[in-house]
Length: 181
Image 1 (cartoon, rainbow, N blue to C red):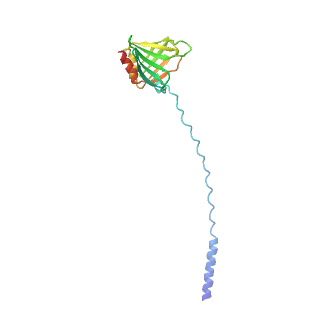
Image 2 (spheres, one colour; image 1 turned 60 degrees about the vertical axis):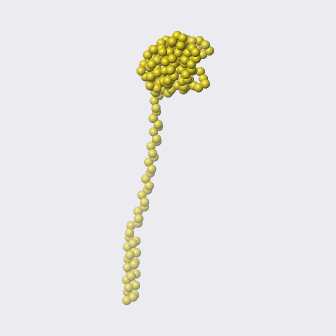
Image 3 (spheres, rainbow, N blue to C red; image 1 turned 90 degrees about the vertical axis):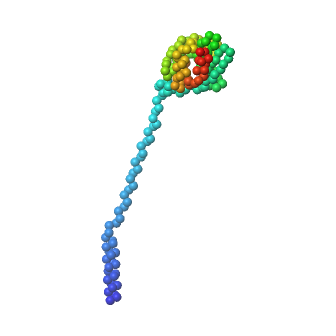
């Protein structure tokens, strides 16, 4: 009987092995998907150049108050250099003078002052000296002076033939104007 069991067990094992050979082979793995290249990054947006005078960068420099026996002045410009713009009170004749160095080709005839509340064009005269300048003369109560004092952060000074100055509206201007009032 033992032989019978051995023979039966061998046949069962052979049948199992035979059936195992009939199983389909495992499928090959699917090929990896081809990576899709990432789109090229878009260029950074182009920032348009400022168009309004309030958007222009401020002219480099600071205001400095200077007083002597005849006049008080608010001088604007870089440290240790000539002033690029001056607001002066001449005490003897109670006039406010706006001085701007000018090295243009033709003689300038006017200066335009732009503030957040007003724009005014004033006549200028040429002033000689080692540094040519143009000078506008104003009465101490001229409304453009108050507009310059109370302008929101900046004022613009334009003289044809030279670059526009974008100046901060600081207290030195008010101090000089008050000296003449």
